[in-house]
Length: 262
Image (tube, rainbow, N blue to C red; front, side, top):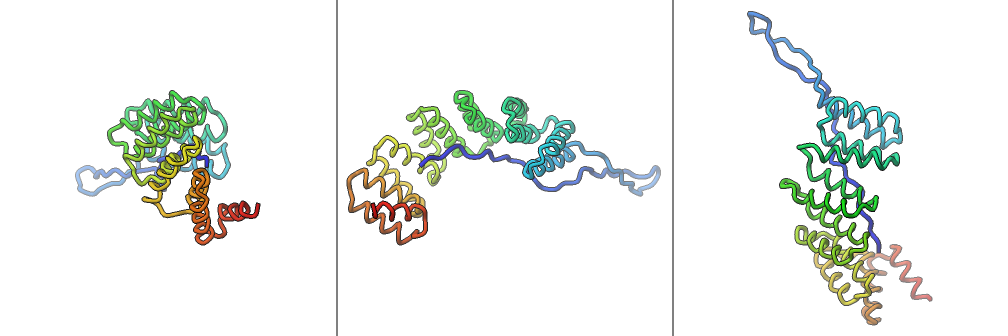
């Protein structure tokens, strides 16, 4: 079982907003108000940002770039604008410019942990493991950042990809301290033990997983493989029967049926 780094989750609001606000004044010598529409650059920037991302999702990179450039022109101090531009540059394959956009985002005094975390994912994808680790840790150290378990899991995934297995294990365990029911992290720990053929430890981790999550076709297939690794064919067969009974049409069940026929 292999699991890569999660897709970057842009923390951007896609709500439709008006690009103008109203200020109240009165006619001289009276209490009669007069409404005057003024251009709000920040609202306009967010509208352009949302429009640019919409175009990007539709595959129109030209209009996406135009609107994201306008957003930056209106409000270069907005973190979301630079993160969106980084995502745009990633999408079109301009890796250097994507990194530059992330650097702009985290250079702002208002930068949040989300930008550091997203930058960390990007850097790990580029195999810049040391800098990636610094970004994840910076995100975790921001006082109001709440997605700590996610960032520790990302640290584990990136460390594992870099070949630092023990460090990866430590980061996964840290993720579970913040989110003990984090299923993806538990599955990663099982995967690591399986890779090392440490089937007894893998069995313990799977029991830990099943204490917080229901049995799935994937977890039952892992149970079969673990018991086979432990040479407990009776237990493997028992999990196989559960797999066939609960998830008869799953790919794991079909694969198990095939293995029985060989």
